[in-house]
Image (cartoon, rainbow, N blue to C red; front, top):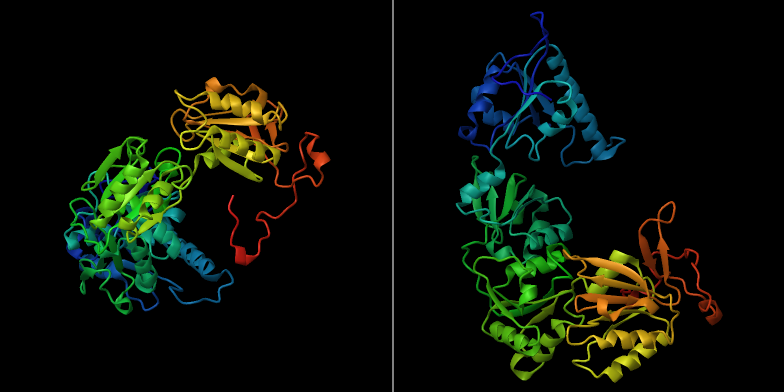
Length: 546
């Protein structure tokens, strides 16, 4: 692709004749002709052919914007869509009809270009931003000299007409088509700072529900036909769904300096950040963290959450869980929206239990409390190593700070005797390192010495280390509080992949279990089970959880 500037007509062949014309994709801006760029006006003035898309009624918004710059001697090429929202009997369906239309339209423009004419395909907004021009560009730009003239988008126009910042500082702007499934819209809106949802019209009810479910309806705005005749702005919540045209957008503006929306009642949401940084956050958790007025948590976990203007952060030591929970609930009683931040999954050896325990006491029983799931360390380490948790497994904590070692040992015996894979949390620390050795001795009473053990340390973090060792070789000195242990069952297998067996080592536990106890005594690699991907469970019981 090449760009010719200043504007020329055709490409010189070297002998004075012109072989091919130049293609221009011309952005006209959001609707007001005065918002066209100087370059757009120049290109239209010098073009031989003006092409534009329209529906079958023949009216083209792009043409109406550029009308005062069109000359009587311009060759006009209306590219009329065969379908818009209606059904079609085309054998390829809607997409087939559109693909055929774009191919035919490109062929029509190619005739002009081959004749040496300059062709300007005009488009409202920006040509490469949800624009119809891009379909001509993809079919012609590799064959003819091409230049794209950018234009002011409807997103920028809507923000300008609202008179409110769209994004500021390190905020993230997400632009979404309203045609996405409602669940997808909800997830994406919940996980971003600012957003613009386009292509409303018939999608408006689903978009409004998605905005409301993401907790953003109170500050969401509506803009219709920005800078055009008939422009309308207002709140999204107050917009009549039956009055919404296609050329309208929903805007979730910047939260910086935004006036907090008072809540009728406070709330505590307990969230998990996963085992490491932002990549492990769920969209729902991102939304809860963004909506919170106060963040409460262990300082190490709070540091994983991006700083937001106007949001208060209350960090504390790792050993004051009850006090932290009470503090968060007191804030919520005063009408604050509070997020209690935990590592991993908040319900697995983490803050959800502490919050719910305090919330069950008389002073806090009326405070709304929600728990949002997160990725727990066992699942993260298992995924990094392969699939050691592919069959039944048990999760235990080796810390004896909140329960006696005798209880831990009894449970280890029971789980090992049942031939369960084990996920061992809190295996050791600087002041407590003897439990790993004791656990290894106990487990060797039930497991073979070569039972695979996964040591996952700082999974997802900058110091991630995932190693597979034999149970007999498990060294307590290599285990700390940032490590989780996954102990295989009698059926767990380690395999070194690669053509010559020199590739990465993985570990996995098959989902099919031998029918006889004798089969368990013979180690080996079982055949891949031919079982459904999801176990058959009566619908009344719900979906099984790993």
